Length: 188
Image: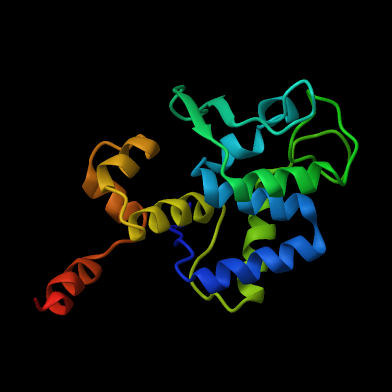
């Protein structure tokens, strides 16, 4: 597996959202939920309609799932942006509650990881992103922007189930240069 980067530029995130929303609401929803949940792609792709929609057809306030990699439960609130993307996507298709949320175009199967990779990579390239981009980019983008918004690295570490803050900083692409920049530009 290649080491991939987060999408650091919010304008490029918005451009990707615009492209995906205009071409395929499933892909748009995948991207939006991915960058707003921090889920691993394996957990994102295994979501079912019943994981996100209640029995009355409303998007739930929280998503509860079990992480494939760690076996740990994950319970998180659905952001307004994610809620709107899910509603728009599900409003564009017919579904049953136990179907995959991200359904393949060929039927009732789950969207495959390889297809998700192509979707994300093609969208990133179309907005001029040259860094290595992959399915893990969604999760890393969530962590990177949470950190940039001032969220404590130990909180992000806990969300990601990492062993220590240093692992999380490296994972989300915070380099020594980024840390040095704080010292060099603070100048109180």
